[in-house]
Amino acid sequence: MDAPMMAETVTLVGAGGDDIEAYFARPLGSGPYPGVVIIHHMPGFDRATKEIVRSFAGSGYATVCPNLFHRYAPGAKASDAAAAAVAAGGVPDMQCVADVDAAVRYLRALPYSNGRVGVVGYCSGGRQAYLVACSLDVDAAVDCYGGHVVVADDELTPQRPVAPLDLTPQLHCPLLGLFGAEDKNPSPTHVARMEGELRGHGKTFEFHTFENAGHAFFSVDRPNYRVEAAKEGWKRIWAFFGQHLANGVASRS
Image: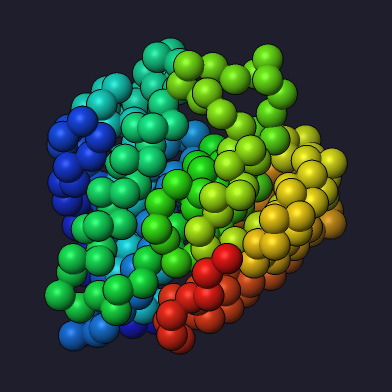
């Protein structure tokens, strides 16, 4: 689908009542439309991420991406804001969850919403998508090669006090995971641990690992880009969200 759409910058009331910027795009028409929250990668709230937002809107989803780095360098270019967030120790998990919750509520309040909202994240955003799926009431989640879902106790920090893997019993929705066989974080061993934990708790999930692909294989503007893996990955995303967001109420674990 390549539906007519509009896109704009909006303001969300995020964690602590802070105003944060977000990029919003939607199909033109009366709907009803499902919603998707995009969680950006570590390079930040950049042009590539905004293109992903527009891609979802063109495919029939009201879509918003909150700028998780907005507080650290308001008005700065994406790379500078990302550097400022890293220098501050990274986005605290509780802050991220609250900001994404604001985005979810924004989408569900739209007069043309069908009431169902999914979340998809890339790289660090993949980890945060897993975290959000275990923390909020969303209808489907996609983790695209999110590292640090599996972490040792000595890797925990005040900003990231709990391993997302340990929150798996609280997973609220179906989960799709897309990974590269050549990735180091998450490595195939990490992905296997995630699968074991999800299966052990009886969760609804599907994982796909692509050969000849490493980290960030969706990123068309980086050397990591792998055409075949990205094409197949997008097919999986459209099918997954089509099932759980566009065609009836998502099944819950």
